[in-house]
Image (cartoon, rainbow, N blue to C red; front, side, top):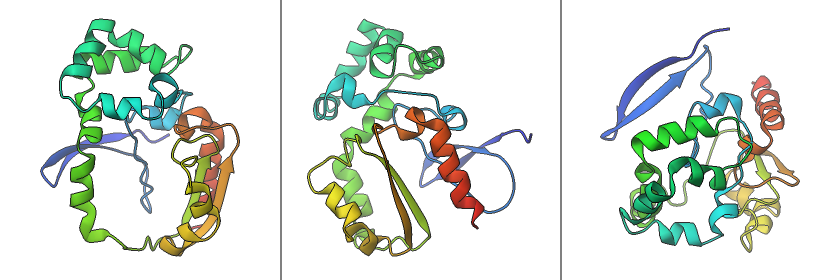
Amino acid sequence: MKRISHRMAKVKGIDMHIAEKGQGPVVLLLHGFPELWPRIPKMKPVETMELAFGEDYYVCRFQEPGVIEAEIARAGTAEVLMKTLTDRNPDLAFYATKYSQKGFTGGLNYYRALDLNWELTAPWTGTLVEVPVKFVVGDLDMVYTTPGAKEFVNNGGFKHHVPLLEEVVVMEGVGHFINQEKAEEINNHIYDYISKY
């Protein structure tokens, strides 16, 4: 099996870590906070942030720089992660080590910069996603369960913005961290989809 090669790339002034494997057309897998890139290949179970902090609490709580970081440090990184992610996750020690070294600030800054993100992406407002897409979502995902989201995805609104949408899969009993909660099923969806091309 081919090993993963690592490199850094400067993208719009940000140093990005890239982990590459294989040849051929690019399949881009992105992770989001609190996940870390090494978990993508394994996709171990992780509970959602919503279970730990509630639907709105965590976004508001992150806004004051330094405050939540200090609370996490006081409580202990491993303890916070165990409550946030899962108490049975074999990768808990990995997360705890990494977040103890670097802290949570990078991930928390995403929520602090929501307004700026809207400003930066404004030039692409209305732009269509014009690549083939298979959309997989959990029926318990906090975004999918937002009022109006299901109707948008399933009744044509999403297809309007993603004209090459080929399939929508709604997985039962799955939340926001779908690749962590149902790793094998997600791997199969990805493999089956990219095998068509």
